[in-house]
Amino acid sequence: MILALETSCDDTCAAVVSADGRILSNQIASQGLLHARYGGVVPEIASRHHLELVDAITADALERAGAGLDEIETVAVTRGPGLIGALLVGLSSAKALAAARRLPLTPVDHLHGHVVASTLGGDPIEAPYMCLVASGGHTFLARVDDPAWYTVLGQTLDDAAGEAFDKGARLLGLGYPGGPAVDRLASEGNPTAFEFPRSAPRELDFSFSGLKTSLLYRLRDEPDADRADLAASFQRAIVDALVNRTRVALEREGLERLAIGGGVAANSELRAAVAELGARVWVPPIELCTDNAAMIAGAARFIDPLPYPDYLSLDAAARL
Ligand code: KG4
Ligand code: ZN
Image (cartoon, rainbow, N blue to C red; front, side, top):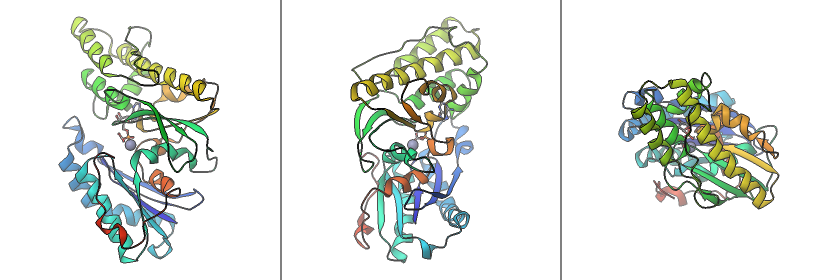
């Protein structure tokens, strides 16, 4: 059994996963509301709350799994990318938990976790497959021939898709995080009411910064424009860009299986749109799309752990 911790951004997460990919527990303490009043994640506040929550959430994950530390064989933890202070809390806790019992420790790339989220549970995806990861910090298409690693085929050249949702929400006067708020408002609007650009840079890359500017100008020129129509049209532009690139990638690579991951994979329109792509699609439950520790344990299953005490000098990395 693997005990995993994830603290790369503003969610304090712990999970217990079996070696064959069964999720025994997947606990998340979201700090979202604490950061909402600042309109975004405040790194120092995130680190402090991780520190307050990490022991309790770890105990909770073990209890829900009906497991004690004695049954844990490996500790896994997000090493990066993310907020450095936030990452350090998870990494230090994981080192302490592992070292106290002389257990091995597996450092995991957060994005690898998103890429393999669909290999967990009762109907795991099998390589080779394509994965679209769209989160608050990253947006990329990856080819997975072996779940131990992934090859990035294209990525955003500027804003991530989640960042576009968050910035758009802010312009529309919706709260943080913006993705769920835009998703909700969009369901009441007309997605063809406004024309927003679908920028198409190099073959499998993405660009979302022009979209935000376009919304800004639209609001300046038409201050009374219907907010639901704007949200629906804005969301349609993001989803179109993601889906079109994914279609090209599937064709170019000749892959028949697709997984989506990352917080934006929680978007209702994207979830519906990828189902129309013709590939067999794995859409994880929402708690496996947004940040969570089960996906970190999931990735750890495919990586050789570091034996005690080799990991004690390991550092977190804001960028990998
Ligand atoms: O993967 P994630 O939880 O954290 C990062 O690693 O960034 O992704 C968070 C992002 C935020 O930008 C949030 O607005 C977006 O995912 N998000 C959504 C939805 N739920 C979360 N975007 C669109 N529609 C949603 N329903
Ligand atoms: Zn993430």
